[in-house]
Length: 116
Image (tube, rainbow, N blue to C red; front, side, top):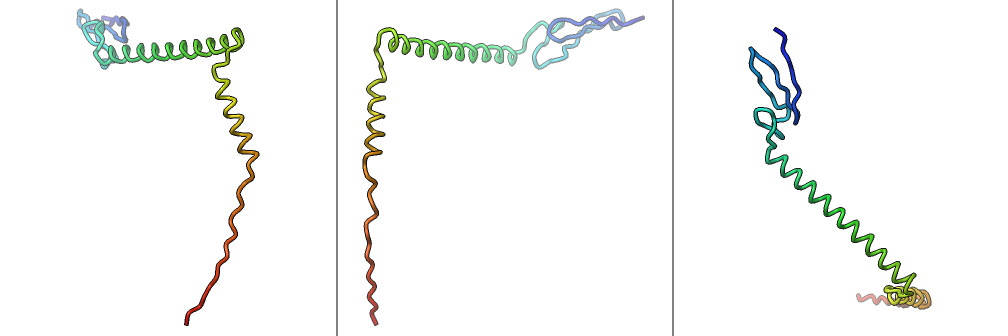
């Protein structure tokens, strides 16, 4: 009698052995049950974590794009530059640093006195 193999969902194989079905889960760390229909708790945790990381990444991207868009609208549409004062302070600090003469090292005289 020929054996009949059926591939089932979730990486499982069912075979006929002596006129009865026997199913084996190929990845028992992820699925179990008679027909590999039950997810393990490890798989459920991995799925939940991947969803939460993806949602955090999406929220971060949306917030960053929103911030950049708001800053551009303020600057180019309303002519408001929220960082203008800080930029001017940095430019003035650079100019002040360039215009100051570098202090010279003091002249040091060393005198030795030999005592006998």
